[in-house]
Amino acid sequence: MATYYRYDGFLKTVNGQAIAGAQVYVCNDINVNLTNPPTPLATVYADNAGANVIVQPGGSLTTDGFGHFFFYALEGVYALVTVNAGVVRLYLPDQTIGPVGAVGLGTVTNNEGPLPANTIIVGGPSGGNDIQTSGILISNLGTVLSVAGAGIATGVVNTIGFITVVGSGSTQVAATANSNLALAPVGHVLVADGNGNVEDSGIPLSIVGGGTVTNNEGPLTANTIIVGGPGGGNDVQTSGVLLSNLATTASLAAYALLSGATFTGAVYAPEVDAPVVVNAQGSGVSAYIAVLGDANQLVTMSDASASTFTVPLNSSVAFPVGTTLTVSQLGAGQITLTPAGGMTFHTPSSLTTRVQYSTVSVVQTAANVWLASGDLT
Image (tube, rainbow, N blue to C red; front, side):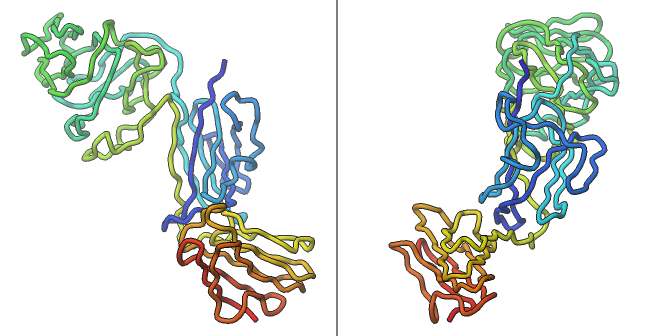
């Protein structure tokens, strides 16, 4: 049975304002054409069973009043393209969803030469089960590490010989590799010292169980961080994340945790002045109640008869303080700004638009307190 993974994102301007009504497209991350709509589109779903295909960019791929969108997809690497007001605004390639691993089998080996002391190990350039040193000291990433289910680790030390770390805390050495530790501390990472010897890194890993660490998931892509595999126990796989994507002075605690191979994240638009989304009400609508998606956007009303634009209480629609609601009279009928019961509206004159094409606004200065302005009678 196929597994579908969820992706959540939020579209915001750089000053933190949610972008509602934007269209998000999910593409296969190969030769993406940044047109409207972009191609090639990937197949994505509205549920974790893969029963309901989303016709892009509809459904949950159109951002709501919080700028939120989501979808489900098979594991893989995708590209996200955001379109607002008919223009491509944002392109995010290399979005990894799910564990992203091919099927394989084998013991992890080092074919690249010396593993310098205390450096992080990543996938080697030959792929498969090949590993190599990253050249980055593990101390540069902090000490927030936790690995469960790995009792025995096997590998090549400086291409001189093999070492085996046993869950009981003892160190076994084959060939010409040497250990400087009479008894390795239980649950600590052992690393090569660059001279063919093994030493304690001083970093606990919370080791549980026994067995040789194996790669059952397929090629360990060069320079990608290695993580535990979906098989549990002593299984490993590539994370799909390049080590170069991590700042060498940051702590692992600063990065998003992978929880059940579900990825969540925030997407921010690169421009401050995002286009205003127009919510056009037809000629048959003479009464309209504002919704969260109208915040800091524009509502137009076109009815020929007198109309009302009602602002609901915060208990019904939680508009943040500082929200602006704007409405324009496109028809012959004047529009009256109408507060819900229990609200306060302050105005310098009236709450009614003056003539056709008048535009008026209300700004929430405190909870359920609004200040009116614009072309009022």
